[in-house]
Amino acid sequence: MPFSDAIEFGPTKRRAAPVSVRPHWDFEGANPAQITLLHQSSDGVAATYLWDCAPERLKFACPREWTIYVARGALVVEDECGLHNHLAVGSSARFPAGSGVAWFFDRRAQLVIFCRDPLPRIYRLHGWLNRLLAKLTGSKSSGFANLPPT
Image 1 (cartoon, helix red, strand yellow):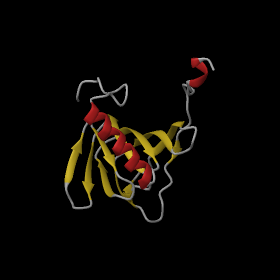
Image 2: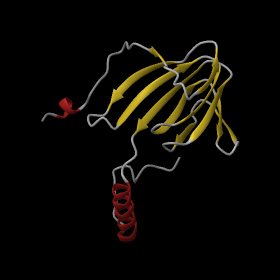
Image 3: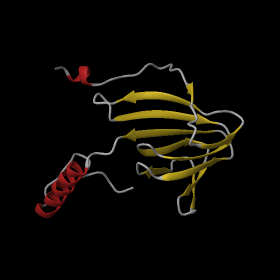
């Protein structure tokens, strides 16, 4: 297979859809957020979205593991213990599946959200053992091992 066939490019113009607020979410805001699907993995366990929202407050439990990157604006994240963390442009955070979280946006913001379904425990153990073995033997486990720390 030619390499170019393996890369999926999305359209430059995409349609944003209103975020459908679930009944169990605690939502306050004048304008509902817009969400745009950027890409979906071929196996269906991961997806990347662009979340565009006006000032609002949203409290919910993450149904999947989420990693967010703040592309524009800022937000305050409150965890289940009541601790607050301010995320500005360039910040990122990872939320485990099932974690309770509240997001507070005081102005318009855009987030890039990578969602994935967590792997079953046996696969996580396998990955952990592979990383441990690579560390013990001094071998490189991925092409990203040489990247500088952030």
